[in-house]
Image (cartoon, rainbow, N blue to C red; front, side):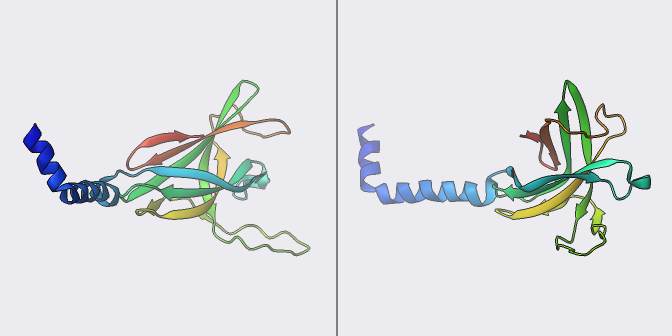
Length: 165
């Protein structure tokens, strides 16, 4: 034991360098995908532009997705579970708004949307997405009215299925 302590004291720089190298190896190459999601802006309740006669409600939500891990991963799907008065409604990701410019005209112009297909996040990458959520056909909450709602955000990725509040 005494010999080991003497060895460590004589070679403390090498031991410290080895420990730092091991930590950097983990942070840069081994650390698994770690998704962090934060809201970025307002929650907008509107009508689904793809629904017949604009009859279906939709929720538009700006989200910042950040990969805090070292491995690349794909965010495959995003869903909202909306709760109000003991009822639960599942809102699925339908589309993503591609053009965020304001159209200040007398007549409203429909938003430019494309189907939500998921996206990839590399190491330490962040991206912002405005996602349009529509109610699932078997949801207890299909139409939104004035009131207080609570929502849980569910993310499905190639690495894991996580619920993020």
